[in-house]
Length: 106
Image 1 (cartoon, rainbow, N blue to C red):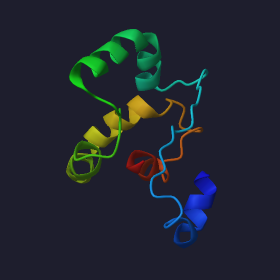
Image 2: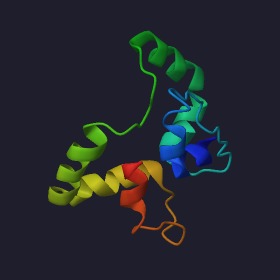
Image 3: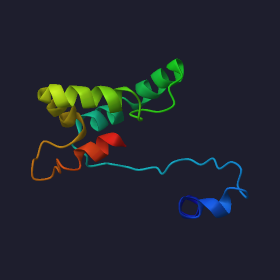
Image 4: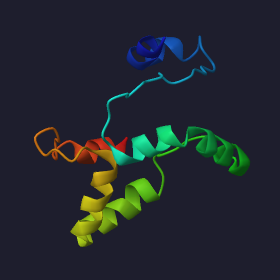
């Protein structure tokens, strides 16, 4: 259904007034990214805190991930390097710095 709606929007826009679906579930069991390791270790606490504060999405596109990170990365390069260390590995051979902006945009 995801592919059909993405490729044939004109065909489906009168036939499907609302499409609600859960995003794909992934398991990153061998990640070395600090933020994902921390999230896995403290999943119960993180889920309870999100429920308490009404948070339904983590690391989604918002002002912090788009505007603020662009401003900080263009003016303070060390900020961008510290931010990247949370989401990528510490092995430069495995990291694709050209794609990092795309990853952060998603």
